[in-house]
Length: 135
Image (cartoon, rainbow, N blue to C red; front, side):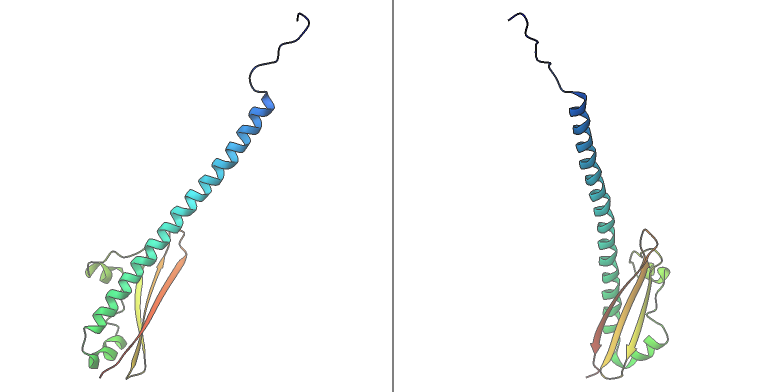
């Protein structure tokens, strides 16, 4: 048919722009999710390390004769800074400090507190309590 126009081949500029917009939104969302997962992974790692440091201190307290526990806690034997944490073969977190508090006498309620700063310099704290008896 001689008077008929041929259909154009390919995509129009509008179709290409819509596609690019959809791809940009999807990639932006994926980048956000990826960066957020990196931060959450580091927070999880730091919490796990702090928990292992607390468990290490609690085991050290449990391996001390009970009669000496309260006195050693009061004089700060288990108040550790980064140097003391490293000295026990542990990897300290950023500005990590470990403190120990005790309540009562028998049974003795011992609370070990780890504080550190995350990547964004926000203070983080994890505390674990246990009860120890002399008998």
